[in-house]
Image (cartoon, rainbow, N blue to C red; front, side, top):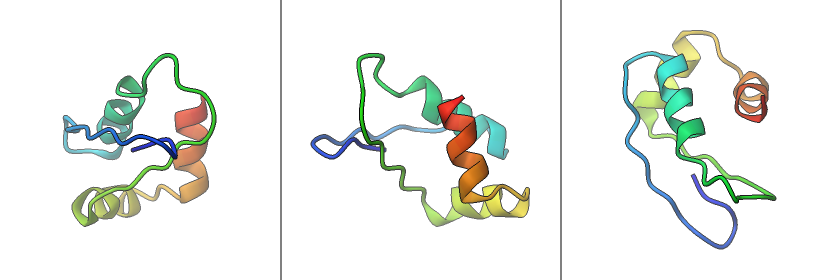
Length: 64
């Protein structure tokens, strides 16, 4: 995940969509504002898709 001018790699814990997304949330720097880009590897993207998560649902979960 990265804002436009930096890059931050995280190592998700867990094997389900909620655990992966919680790993993302807990790795967002507290002082970050603005745009966030999230790149998932194919394995994690498949887990989210298999559990029925849409891009909009992922976005809403992170924003919440």
